[in-house]
Image (tube, rainbow, N blue to C red; front, side, top):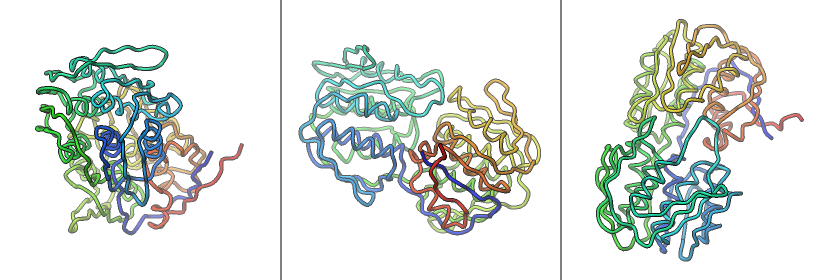
Amino acid sequence: MESFLIKGGVPLHGTVAIGGSKNAALPIMAAALLTDEPCVIRGVPHLSDTEFMAQILESLGARVKFADGTLTVCARKIHGYADYELVRKMRGSICIAGPLLARLRRARVSLPGGCIIGARPINLHLKGFAALGATIQIAGGYVAATAKKLTGATMFLGGRAGSTVLGTANVMMAATLAEGVTVIESAACEPEVVDLANFLQVMGANISGAGSPTITITGVKKLHGAEHQVIPDRIEAATFAIAAAATDGEITLKNVRADHLRAVIDKLNEANVSVQRRGEALVVKRRGKLKPVDITTLPYSGFPTDVQAQMMSLLALAPGISIITERIFEARFMHVSELARLGADIEIEGPSAIVKGGKPLSGAPVMASDLRASAALVIAGLAAKGETQVNRIYHLDRGYEKMDAKLRKLGARIRRIQEKT
């Protein structure tokens, strides 16, 4: 396995281009299964997750070409069985179930894997499929959904932690080829859901309300091929913005959507970090000393859970007490013990982390537990004095394309090495 070796204490300066959104690209790739015509998807980041999804599409019978950020998928002849060995590698693979069910009226998909950050059941996906008329069976680690026909229905997809992003995407894709009108109440409002809806509409789907809690889909008989540009990755943009603040540097972010980052920008401003538009770019730098901030993660347009760990690294540097409350996943504080190895003073009380910031961080070997925890440890290592080795960065490679190369261009002393066994 590989690690990052970081010599910290260097302010980051320069310009970084943000890649396409992983969380938008995965369901859009799956949506290409809805048609037998070619689809061209631009701005797909080259990550282990998108590679896995491409392999899954190929295993289903689709022809896939991936080059220079452009993915071409032609799913002329496909079958409905997705094997465990591929699907187990990432949770996002479950989003192939909706397109398979819509097009073939059958899908047999292994229960997915991915980062271990708390319970992330797919019961709402299955609830939506059942409302459309599918029969659901779970046995031997697989979900099998079958239907003689799919019929539009009104359904509520709110869960214990709010709306479900992948569930909304999955049911929306299934409903595009259902007979009649489907209404999804308590739908996820995330930009990634809107991006998927835009792609489906270019394919010929009839969808309204994406980006609101109520999405209406009027089924059509057939979808056709389409071309699409994936939105910028708001989580990658937030991560680099926080890295600029943590190292007391100044970074210009290109290919960003400020409207997708309002909650993050608001909390950075509270922490005394300036985020200013400069044309189509954002410029991020500290105004002075960092200030403590209280944060609660919420569904969009609230503060994203996928930025919680990175902000914790920043607030560990801010003198005073910050409180971070996690309302989406109950086990998303596994990075706390590793940040403590770098000198951070953080206590867990139920769903909240109390960050007693302002103490200097010092380098140490640390272990990544999931994708965003990896990013948090990299940020802390960049800000710490001395040398930090972040192990198990395969987590990070799931969601950040060439992060070490991008950071080196900004002046970071970071390199990829093989872990010692």
